[in-house]
Structure formats: C-alpha cells, structure tokens
Length: 112
Image (cartoon, rainbow, N blue to C red; front, side, top):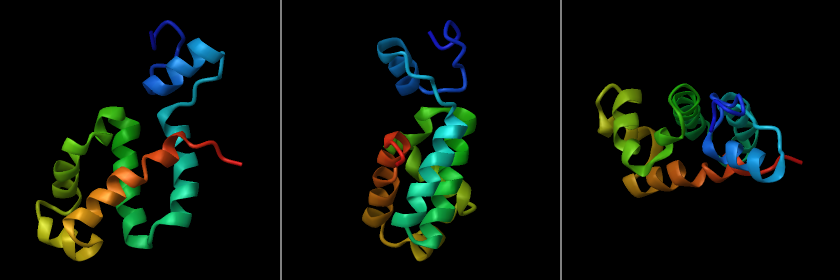
C-alpha cells in the first residue's frame, strides 16, 4: 500500500491516515523532526542524544525500530556494547524503558 500512494518513506500510521482521511503522509524523517521539537521540552540532554539516535534508526529502518525488543540492541549499538555505560548515562533500566516508550507518543502528536 505504501508504494501505491507513493509513501514508501512513511510509516503505517501515515499510510492509514491518508487512506482513511486523505491526510498528506509525512515521511519518517519529517515525523522524527517534529517529534524532536517536542522531545527537547520533555527529556534531559543525555536522553535527547539517545532518542535522536533511536529516531535516526526509525528514519532509516522503519517503525520496527521502536519495538520494545529493540531497546537492548539499540543501547548496545549506541554505547558500544556497554549496558553499564548506558545505565550510567541514562539511569536505571526501568527509567531507560520509560524514556524509550514514553517518547514515542510525540511521534504521532500534532504540533501546535
């Protein structure tokens, strides 16, 4: 369906919004840029750096990078296979999980 509506760089949310409501699909890159503006107001600088890293993977790979199962592999990639460094930088594992899942709402929130 993404190919049919020329939205191969968009995620499923935008494809469905286009089909159901004739909304112009945003690319993942546009969606990530909008989210970063909101993220900067809700997360500290170290969290923002990690979330920017996550969003770059979302843009290049797709929405599957936001799956909870991807959190540990993304942390290992960002922190050069050192979860201890990630914990030192971002906080306890449950806090890191909240940051990872908590920022995702900003991807789909409309900006004012």
